[in-house]
Image (tube, rainbow, N blue to C red; front, side, top):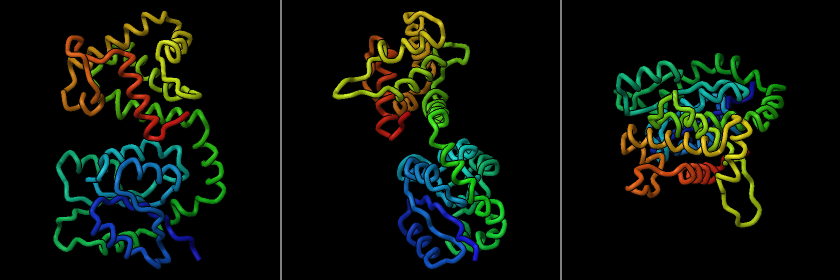
Length: 278
């Protein structure tokens, strides 16, 4: 007998979530591995549980389904299998449709006539032989190798760097020509990796900048100045809503942008609170 296909359900609507859970009860072909209502929770399940199928809504209680899909596609080279992604959503525009055509495997519109959870299950039943042959049959020894690969320090650092690029750096309008953009990314990565004993707090000038100095063969004042220029550039050219999303902390109005230390410490603290470690 074939092993059931592992499913991760990401759904913020309680009624729909309960309906899906009921459909997968006592199902020999599919096993509901986990149900999540937010982006971070779903990513944690995807990284550690290796679902073969992900069913996701785009509107979530925390984060959103588009970011989730993009994050999963970016990290799938680190996973044993590339999950088969099914989207169920009320929201559909040309831009979203184009994105889903590229990143998702199948899409259901919740507002369409006749839509219900049975339609999704019927689709998965039609596709189960394909999904099984492409994904489930590859578990075996690949799981052990992939597990070791995923938890290696280098891979964790690469995943963290991608996360910082997508969630922080790329959202700020910092010219790629500014070296401070690269320094800023690396400073945050280094900061997440700093470990303390007791109540000591992160000191960017002592804990981060000496590492950047050695890595880039540049003087610390030059590195600090380049990061500050990058942040000033961001606060001049990035829309206010995005700035508040990325850095909701206080900004001295006379300065107009956070200092390098303020910005780095805030982002490192946020990332650590989200569970990122090196």
